[in-house]
Structures are given as structure tokens and as C-alpha cells.
Length: 134
Image (cartoon, rainbow, N blue to C red; front, side, top):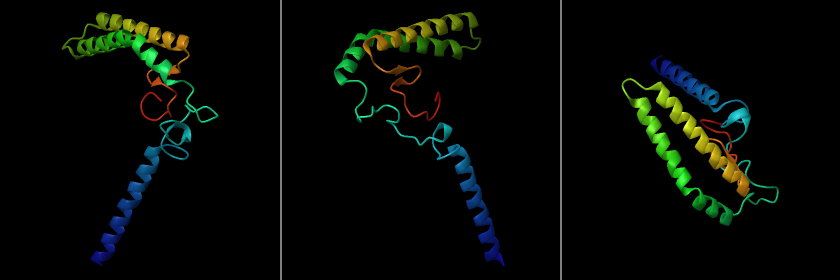
């Protein structure tokens, strides 16, 4: 009798674990938003299998925007410190956020001008839509 209960309880936990796992994966084929499978290069390859940008262009973009990206990280750190204060200064936070948005927009504009695919909050390429900010 005791062995039967152990099997029933074990099967119940197994079933619950599979159900929770399936629910966490999302609808459809699982892993990813809207039922799409998650792949690191999904949406980036052109029909010929080539990436839609070349590495020389990317290197030039990174060199040209090095100071701008450093400024973005500096603003993000300052913004983080403003949020962590005991009594946050919401006016200063608002100003830092608008400054950060302006810098990110400038980075996006430069990427567009150079013909580099750049999407907000995700960097280069479209990505697969998994995780935060999909």
C-alpha cells in the first residue's frame, strides 16, 4: 500500500512539473514569443543565408560610436545611482532619462545612416524575441 502511494505522489509531481514547464515556455512550439522557436540568428539572415551587413561596416560603426556608447553607459550608471538614493530626486531622474533617450536615438540614427540594422534595446539585428524586451 505504501509503495502505491509513493508512485501516485511521484506521478502527480511529475505531471505538475511538466505542466508548469509547458506553461512557462509559452504558446505554440515553446520557447519564444508568439509560439516561434528561439534561435540566436532568427530573423537576421538574408535569403542567401548571408548576414545583411558586412564586418568592415560594423567595425567602422563601433569605432565611430565608441565615445557615444561610453557616454550612454555613463548616463545609465548615473541613472542607476539616482534610483538607489534613499529619497530619489525624480526631476533629476527624468532629466537623465531624457538625456539617455536622446543619446540612444543618436546612436540609432548613426546606425541607420551607415546601413546597419539596429533595433532599440536589443542592439544589432532583430533577435528572436526571447526574454525581456522581446
